[in-house]
Image (tube, rainbow, N blue to C red; front, top):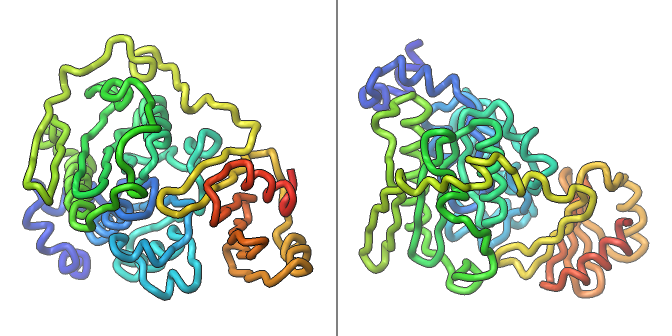
Length: 344
């Protein structure tokens, strides 16, 4: 008990119910989807605060360009091509060994999100992908799990809390899943300071939910621009869409997408295409593929993936059959390489 009180002493002084609040926090499970800029800052806050169980999910590996804003990674992680979920877990475990940390080297999609988040008390958005956010919203409403949206680009950020049956859902706020417009980190970059500000807002609201201090939960969407000194709050309690297909009609369109095909997606800022086989569509033997690729060129094998330069593309193949093709933005090239080097 002395170690417990010492570790969280300053926090115990702050919590509304002191040690009771801390024990509530220590009994909760949170899933962070995306362990990049926002996700690493969120995970850092939660682990240091003493969450009970943290699940971290990310599909990517650490790159040098991540180090400017993704606080849990270092140059060695980049040199070793460590998956972000693995590198984050290693750092977080050394920060607070009392927290149970589960990592998933996965591309979150309709076939796996339910198994990943089931049993969570809260989902935190650390992704940079709008389609994944609509997927999170679907599973949030279906399983009655709150989630906290966060987005950053350039020097701007925004966040809001979605609580099923209490607030409008994400689909109420953004009825059309328009992912083809607007600035992205590819086009305008991102300032590291806005990442930490938005993540801190998200983490603070997470603490309120997790220690059950409901009266303090923010009822607005926050939007700010740290470079241009702009701050706005948008009340959204009256934005419930009575015809919302998700929270009102319980039609989970993003969860019900076709699960029989390979998913093809671009990675923000990476000049890369990802090919993800849906569950049950492919079985690979990574050791056999390693032997096959060795005949074609130099292959690097790590505990998590194979890396292979083929033609002028850099390939990263994970054990679950997911392939990252770096050096192209053309989906058909990625599909061809997958078919040629991995299988249908």
